[in-house]
Length: 77
Image (cartoon, rainbow, N blue to C red; front, side, top):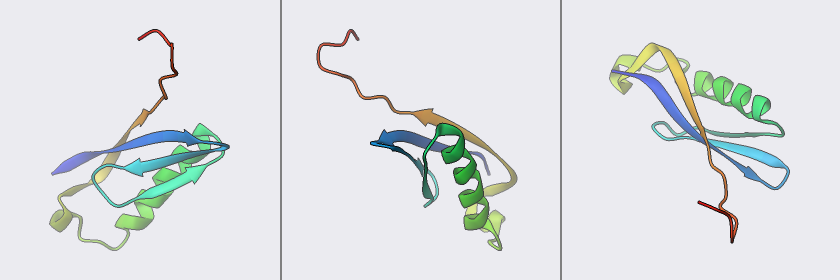
């Protein structure tokens, strides 16, 4: 049973976007705090009323967020 949901966050112009890797949830926000808050809410709404056992998702989830950074030309590795 999955107890952690993973999400990737990236910046697109003036917005941050987040996408869960295991479940079909995406959201956005103007700040990192806002996008993470929106992500928690979206995951809760997505799973609301669902049979978590059938989905293989624990009742109490943790969220692991990775932030994707672009590599600029000429930047040191």
